[in-house]
Image (cartoon, rainbow, N blue to C red; front, side, top):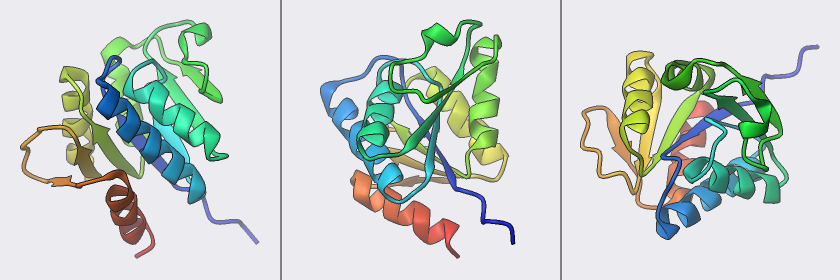
Length: 155
């Protein structure tokens, strides 16, 4: 009998972030791990690193889809580093590889991942983003965001 595929939840956000965004990303990552899902991200610093640290501390697995061509560019909490050599184009792989995307803050790269995710028919949830984009669901805190994600995935 085949085992059900593990959910892959994308956490997207800028490579540098505020302390509040870092705390939010950490909590999101930890909650993803606690619920047995895999965290997918861009693999670098800022929101991505904080989310990976949370997932690591929660006992989870992290996948970083790196824009460059060096595995060593990954933050220290990435378990599986995938080198793309694609720059920002790797955002399409992050969006496509995720069942749902959670944006924590972010800049233009995050905006592209949001747009790609929506174009691919993915649910995108925003925390601390300030993005007012039709189709993006706003969550008030990490627990609410993860509750929304799993309610959707388990339907």
